[in-house]
Length: 557
Image (tube, rainbow, N blue to C red; front, side, top):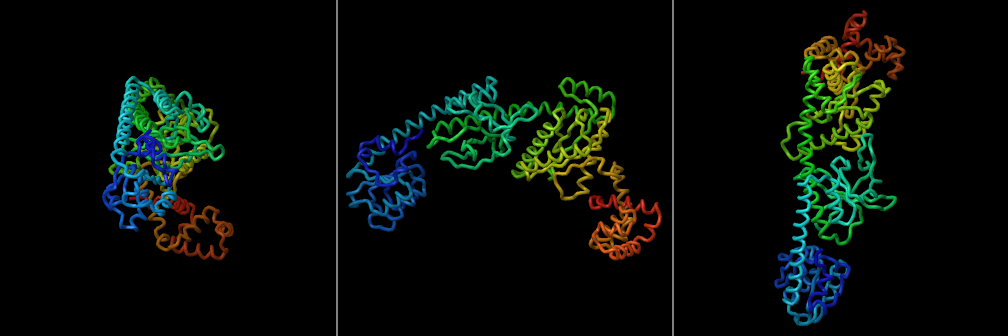
């Protein structure tokens, strides 16, 4: 801990005989240096954390500067002002005393005829000794952390060493609020967490922390509104990339000891090293995972057989029946070039991680692959007792939870039919991808969508770009006269409702909330535009198919 002004007043003989005239509440500020006022423009030469000593000689004929001196020094972050009177002033001006008391800025009256060197020398010596001790302490602590990490220590051991240094429980969290490790005495903090079906603990979603600026950095604080218990978070970062938090219970001591700064900085560094090490291992594991996905997508039986053997060795259980789910962000993700794009990519990773977490809570037997900015999910259905409506509702809840926690990067999902055999995996994958892509085309601008293949109806016929092109040609050739006439979309809405109601005029008017004669007038205009399109079953079928595919028209090249 640094040298406080209160302690400094006991070190040097002139300071022991000094009087604190005002601002006594600020005596616990830490003195980092001592400066002497020799020039009128002293504000250009002082630094935060300094104790300023003066005779006020440079301002002896400038009453205005004397009046504003204390507020300006306080604004610059100085810890106090020590004045020796009698040399050039009779007494310290009352305006300075009042300003110092108002600002809790220590104003000290020194004995007459003080030699400033008698103040500067002992204080500077003590400050240098404290800094040397802090440096030795920092080096020793860093060496302990490095020895721990090099010997294979995990998050729990790192948290234990931090707890020993800080004399309080310690938690280590990743950027998804997942508990990675804790000190042995941290069980009292587990009430802030909730478990998932995979056995992992996550900080409760309701925990929201406020930013707090400390003298040596920024932390976040959460205070339980019911119990008043505090939880503080120190960020773990690599450059601009946020990796997680070190959590400790509050309240923090005031002032916060220097050892907290050292321990949290070194702890965050070694935790980041551990995270990057495990991330490298995870990337290797992901390569094997992706190899399995590529093998499952192969149409060759021998490749599938080899892939299933590899999956078994890796402990992946791929038991039919199953469906596939493809989850992807609702915002396009390009190449990572700028800082903002790196943040976007990080936010996308967060959304896909959250989707994976909540999908696993719904189905612990699910298997996941990361494919670029998409998440491919093998979703076993045996024993779930969930048909398409129930499954869609569960997946919709997952998308909504992701949207609540990461609203700038929501995700949507496409779901295939249920398949009984792993040889159908390529078909299931195309089915899920098609559901996602066509569903987005049908609902442009919407987010957090869940589209099951069964909802697509005739759109399931669109299995290739060539088919999509033909469907576009059908829409244009069939509906072009009506589209040219229908400026506000009212005729299209009327035509859809009329066909859905089995060409019942009265029922159509009821559904649209229109007068019967209004519907008759619109149908007259529709017949004038389309000619005999409504006069035969074949023509009506062509018209209904064209209407069904019409939403895709804007997404065709």
